[in-house]
Amino acid sequence: MEIFQPNQTSARLLVTYAKEKYFKVQENKNIEKYLIVYDIFIKARSYYIINKIFFFLALLSGIVVLLWPSLAIFAKDFGWEKGFLNSAIVQTTVTGIAALTFAIYSHYKKRQMYAENLMRFTIFSEEPLINIKDYVVQEMERIDSGFSFGKSVLKEKKDQKSAKG
Image (cartoon, rainbow, N blue to C red; front, side):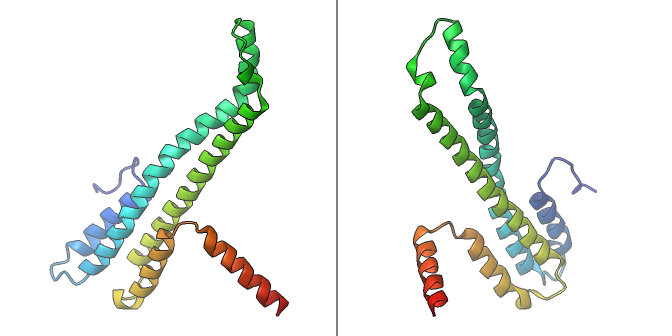
């Protein structure tokens, strides 16, 4: 079968499977289910691209963090003595950038995995679309929502108030 290719994401495999299972139905009864699966696929694909970029940036920045102290020594051996190589501020900045790339990669990897799992739920659910669409749409909204500092602060204050009770 053409859908089984090793160099594809789970989301690509699932959307291809859903197309074969739902879209080619002559009565087109499940075209709405395929539409939702494809919408989730678009999100999963976007997250895949972002997390792939940040995976390589995180890998590169992690190597730079590991090699930075040695870089200062090698530079001195070659007569290229620059103070910024030994600066704690620069080393901390490089480490912070590495941590940021790891955090962004992790964030979008989780989003991609969650979108793929939502695709699996939608495709393999025996329930008709009318019964699962509200749940799927609600989960898609959750996937789309980014981190909001204001919401976190308000939630923390609400939790503190309810604990004081």
